Length: 82
Length: 206
Image (cartoon, rainbow over all chains, first blue to last red; front, side):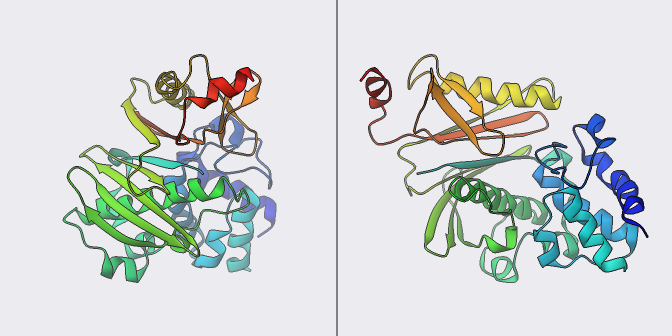
């Protein structure tokens, strides 16, 4: 799966938790989940769990703890599906 | 000197999901589960610990902006029910912090301080009418400024692009660390004064 495809699928995972939904269409790898998309930090674990279910993967604790941006999230997913 | 706070709207948490191992094990360690007891329902207990850790993260990240929030790396070493709040202690390397968490059927609000007695820490929470994100953000500032007006009138809260909010008096930043939190219809704030808070405006005049 190409990174572009991962990004498109990730948008669907992020959608229910994103306050700033308009910006979701313009995200890139540098977009901060909390600062830019206004995702409440209380939903960060939800996003990891949803991403795991969507891709049938397990994101380990170390990878999850590094997730700050959309790119970090993509990296964690890509690492597990490749 | 810093401050950190958090508020969780329990109605928008998912108790069933919170109770799943894959969820709560990302927030609470085995030793915390075994060592910290409470009469709270399990999902509420998990969100209580989340709130303590998030507040401690906010406290610490003020001096370490590159810190990433990793709940398992912020150990809560004690949690005791006092009269109307849970008193916690967080020990992270050489840092020892104390927390007070107020748990209701609707929310968990936590504030963290380096002071066990919270003598110079102020905090509060409010219910707002509109859960729109922009309104949450505006409301928490409005309520925090209302409290800060007892310190000095006309203060401003300024959000630095990549840092925590700051309290400004005219063109001068004040040494009043402030933390803001909002979740759905609930907003909360905390700030930390020095022992002699009356000096803020005096020093501005010097």
